[in-house]
Image (cartoon, rainbow, N blue to C red; front, top):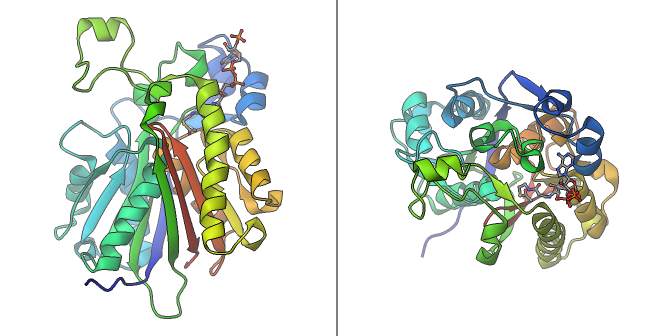
Length: 332
Ligand code: ACO
């Protein structure tokens, strides 16, 4: 039997491209207003890559900085997992592209598709690799260039998303060190049609028809996704906390996937969390899909809100549907 080892986050970094797309900029593209976007979502602006930039390009600076904080060289990494919905290409994987760019000559790895749960699921997989002894250090990335699949003529989706990346390094924790504690995840494939990109896969390969019908962009039934996200974020949070005999009052910080301020606040209320324990930074980035949670962790740390030893709950809901939650003690 494999003896599982305790695992900690030993490095964290996030990156967004410099170009900012504000609500006022979007007002010039579609029939919307800054007031509507702010009230319905909480988003004020988002960062967008310049043409020609791909997911591995924004993941690279985050990955390098996370490795530097962990005090490791590229050769120390045994495993790379990239949570992304917007890989540089369908194949080869962005994990392979990143491995070559970093020069991680001893690593294997792959991309993981879980949409907005990309980071929570990738963190879980990297954690198991280090825990089992399959790798000494794992590089876990959540990164998306959502602007590559957003229809900037569709007001119901183009206001929501931005581009961003985050990375953590996972390493073996010492006996008294803070560590990753537990996770609870679920998928519900019945939710697929409510949030998807209809073409570009094997079901509907690219054709003149799919392009003319704008099927290579995100399509969403906003209200269906919203209701599912509110219900499931709360349920999964309660399930994981209860399993450990905890309530919201025991948490130092709650870091949710950042899709909509109203979803995050409803979940916080459900688990009885005081507003000061809730991280919300979507105002500046929008929904960066797999990038949101590492971006929020990095911001919370920079603001002095996330400190060593803190008990932290992460949750995510995304296309699929995918639902995720992780309980951890912050180790940096
Ligand atoms: N500007 C102005 N009006 C708009 C806009 C816009 N950008 N977008 C939609 N509207 C209009 C609609 O056309 C509709 O008008 P109608 O009543 O005349 O038909 C009206 O606003 C209300 O539309 P709803 O979709 O019901 O608005 P809702 O309050 O549900 O908010 C939103 C829409 C913000 C998309 C919300 O449903 C939401 O956040 N859903 C969650 C989805 C999400 O964030 N998904 C991302 C990934 S998955 C995840 O992370 C959970």
